[in-house]
Image (cartoon, rainbow, N blue to C red; front, top):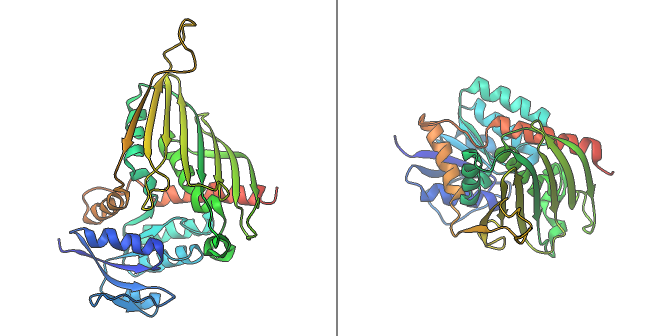
Amino acid sequence: MNQLKFGIAGYGKMGKIREKSIVESNDTCVVAIYDIANYKNNSKSIIYCKSYKELLESDIDAVIVSAFVSVAAEYVILALKAGKHVFCEKPPSMSSEQMLKVIEAEKKSGKILKYGFNHRFHFSVMEAKKVINEGGLGKMLWMRGVYGKAGSIDFHDNWRNYKNYSGGGILLDQGIHMLDLFRYLSDSEFKCLNAQLSNSFWNVECEDNAFLTLQSKDGVMATLHSSATQWKHKFLLEMAFENGYLNLDGILSSTRSYAPETLVSGRREFEDVTFAMGKPKESITYFEYDKSWELELTEFVDAIKGISPVVNGTSNDALEIMKLTDYVYGNFLGS
């Protein structure tokens, strides 16, 4: 099969990250780019389109949608109707209602649709999933996630803090990854029992802190704190089981500001009072490479080629996440 030809709609930070993984793959190439800022670079082999319609009419097989959330669902539907395969960044839409329309278009199109939840493809997360599936730790009891940002001097000017572009604040920006990992690692759906959204510091339209308490259909309790006032980059997901625990502490990024990426495992073994209770022996595994962008692209390309289906970042994954965030924003915003 010849190289799959990609078009990119939205050439900001994520568009450029996706472009890099496409260019570095032997199976794919970038043919056309559309951005409302009419961004240009020095490449003579790429067409720079003046509209999204022009992008869809160019000689491409698939579209990367990395534009504002406000147009994500619309762009995905238009691309599917135009006979293109689609890879869309998170957040997937402004609401679950929009996602239902996307799924309807997906079914009619017969094309491949995948959403960008790249955290599933970090090596620490994949190893944790493997350990959980092996069953040695027993039943999962609870999960506790923290995802925090340092913020920046111009944080309040970022488009993600304007609801008409982003649909929400730090919950949709970062917390959505943790919600997806809750679902992925527990293999269960969650409902939100309680939440508190606040503007603690930043003078923005959207929440800069989100505290959620959730429960899965299997009785797993989970808490999430997603924050834009952490004053450092922080990622931590703790999971307790009948026979021990797993901690995903840190995660690799291009800046390595969330590093190191580690998987900490411990077992419930020191229960004799003659031993030092509360300080079990731990195993720490360090991960030095982030191949999540490449692995995500590979799953998408393999699905297009008919080698294997999309398993991570399906339209149903996106729908379930939007159901959760819809419920939080609809019932706890301003609480």
